[in-house]
Length: 320
Length: 320
Image (tube, rainbow over all chains, first blue to last red; front, top):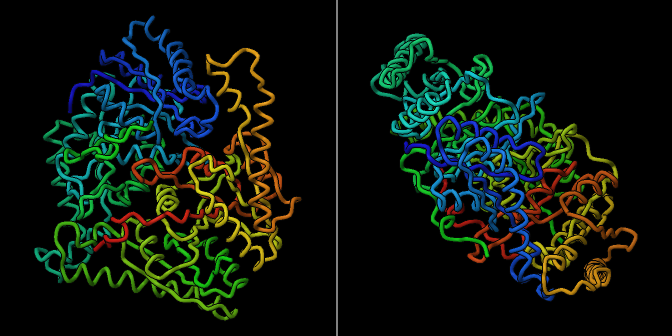
């Protein structure tokens, strides 16, 4: 990964508390990074000459952006007083997630912070259409912040997949662990590595594999699968120097086990991949990732694999 | 009049309660339409796309699909006893929303039903990534069902936009009122046509300009705005034979006013559009629609404009 020298925080002025800004500032302070506050605004009434008969329209966009910029400056002021280097930007763009990505590319951001919501009684994340689209298409690490404080000694859970069972290349596991360690090093956090596999499916897949004789008893196959997962998992975590007592290989379904595990270790952030490609190289959010993301109890840091490229149309089409 | 002959109902094989199936069966009974129960299943471990394919993997996929077929037949049996024409289909396809969109198009479904979730304390719909993708890309009208019985004389809110302020063409209003009328006739429902406009916008717009003299008649401007909206709204309603008593023109923001209105009139379902195109003809969910959909307290029926085409890559790429 690149060094984190610029942190982009997406600001939502309708929210009472700017959690993403708090978390972004927290990281900026610890990494000595610059902070960029972004407000991406769009109003369909004031676009494309609709209501064109009103002569004031020409200036409306500009004046609205000026007003928003002033409000961003107000948010920036106390951070600057605290010694942070803060830039502000109000931009007219749509849809929101594309505006965020375009500005992240423009300002050369290394990580993006955005608020998200969580409902504890339901134990599920309330991800919006914008969140899902960012998860799918944001080219730099995306940190979705829950409305809660981060602990003094945060726990980072790096969710890796060493058998690449979810179409993820090995390089992604390295990226996840490198990012986790780098952030943890700067923030006094501990890194735990997590991997789960579904024993039932593992067995079904194994019996499809010519190397394992079908005549083996079920328990035997399951044991072999466990050993195989354990071996690869250990290789990856050893390579990255994660302590043995912080490595967790769990049999079970990821979308159940990872949220459960995150709760049990008091995780502050889960770092994971989310996108897959199909045979036609089209990007989508994997079905396991989709279900897992909805149930995580903490912040989420989504990392892209090295083959990832921002969809060209997002890079090109800025809204007028 | 929109004809409903074939209803496609998406069944979630991981849960026991099937609110979408109940609602779809209700409408099938009222309209005499054929009801197709549909499971779209995929498991990345058993897919031949990953690693290698093998006869035993293919066998495993077949067995799972057969299992789902049997399950669908069990659900269909009691419905058939009550006189409904019910067929069942289980398919291996991925991602889920694309599998649904492809199957609906291939079978010429007139209406697609799917479960969604709603949290009353939060007063918001919990739309998943799959739901958002269906809202964006399903060509047939999409009915997202929240758990619960439908009233004997349900209220249908047709949310129209006669000034086409949200990039929607006039024909979409016709389509919305057309399908609402079909449901009204079949079920004894009551239609209410709703349209909102933002009065502050006119003020904000004029206010933003330096060219407007201080003496600018804001009241005049708002009066003109209301008159324009009123006339267009009435024209559309008259064309579709909606009584004046069932028309509600509301001043305010759609994403605040429409949910509040639906609670007031105890709406069972809101019929509305959701997608827009940008200048490059790329599809997305409009900013107003996105905010509104999350806050609706009832079922949603999303109707596509007549320029809508299923994205080319979805219609072509069936998963292996």
